[in-house]
Image (cartoon, rainbow, N blue to C red):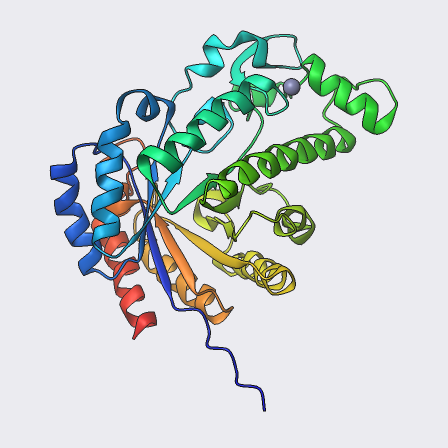
Length: 340
Ligand SMILES: [Zn+2]
C-alpha cells in the first residue's frame, strides 16, 4: 500500500516596502509573525540595490531568525518588472533601451539586451551573497506598458534592432508596424528566455525562484499555455498569479480560472503554486469580497496565499485602499479561519 503524501503546509505571505530601517521593521515583523504569516516579500529596487543593501540584509536576517522565509522582488528594475519604483538603468544604459513604435527611445531596458542581463546578474548576486534571501519573486516581467494617451494612440514596444532581428529570425518576414499576434508571441518568448536565463543564474547561487506572470486583463483564455514554458523551466520552483479581479473589474469567481490553471500545471510539472490577493486600491465596502476570493482559492487547492501589501498598503497614499483597516482585517481573519 502506498502512503498518501501529506499536502504541503499552508503558506501565508505579505509584501513589504517603504521602511528600510531595521529597528522600525522589527516592530512590523513582530506583528507579521504574530498574525501567522510564513514569508515576507521584500521589494528591492535599483535604488535599494545602490543605497540599502545592508539595511535590507538586516531585515532579511531578522525575518529568517524569526522563522519566516524572506523573498526578494526586483521591484521596477529596468522598468521590466512590476512596481512603482523608477529605473535609473533604463535612463543611463541607452544602448539597452526599448524603442517605441513611434521611434521614441524609452527609459526602460529591453529584455533582449545585454545591458538588462548584465545588471540583473549583478542584482541577483547581491540578493544571494549580501541579502542571503531564500528566493526571488520575479514580479510581472513585461515590456513597456502604455497608458493614457500612448495607449489611446496604440503605441507599443519594443521595436529596437534586437527585437526586430528576433522577429525576423522567428518569422522570416518584415517587422510589422502594429502589434500583431506574431509580435506578441515573439515578446512572450523573449520574456520567457530572459526569465529562463535569470532563474538559472539565481538557482545556481542557491536561490529558489517564484514567477508571477502579468496576464492580459482583457482575456483569460490560454492562461495555461502562457504559464507552461515557465512551469517547464528547471530552476523555477513556484508559479504565482495575481488575478486582482477588483482592480481589473472582473467578477471574483474568475479567480478560479487562474487557480485551476496553476494547479494543473503545478501537478504536471511538480511545482508549487502561489496566489496573490489585492490589498491596494480596494474600493469602499469591497473588503468582504477578498475573503470570498481567499476561500475560493483554498477550495481550488491553493495552499499558499499572499497579500500585496502589509496593512493593505495604508501607508502609500496613491495605492491605499478606501478602508485599509477593514481589508487587512478581512485578510488576516480569513487566514486564521482557513488555517484553523
Ligand atoms: Zn527590444
